[in-house]
Length: 159
Image (tube, rainbow, N blue to C red):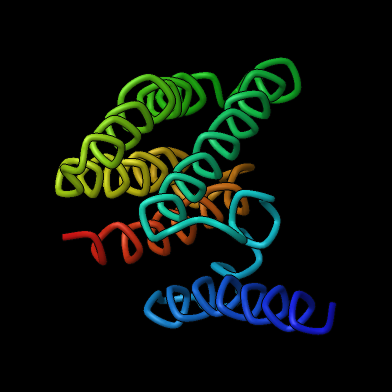
């Protein structure tokens, strides 16, 4: 019985250390660990699996941001032009960048996955710039940029 407990503890340590080892190679260790530990798949994932989890986080945040944009149309009609641009940008993240990244990682072609992840961060930045310093989305934009940056670092480990 003690042997089983020891083996299980060693497995848990090695699983946790996979996340830690991976996240140490990203620009934001704490964000990376937090994102990966919040998903039950993280504890048993290899690097490709960790990358896919992070891409899912990009998708969740893009969906949340798009919902926020849709709500702002009613609250801030004066921002319609910038919101229209952001809506297009975040739809691109959801309909092109995320699927491209998932497919590329799943098929073992991480370079194309990296392209999709990079583009998600760029799309968020362009959205933010459209408000000319008065964005109601700054916090979500920064989150997207940070998650994209962490995800890119993990995807690069697969190159």
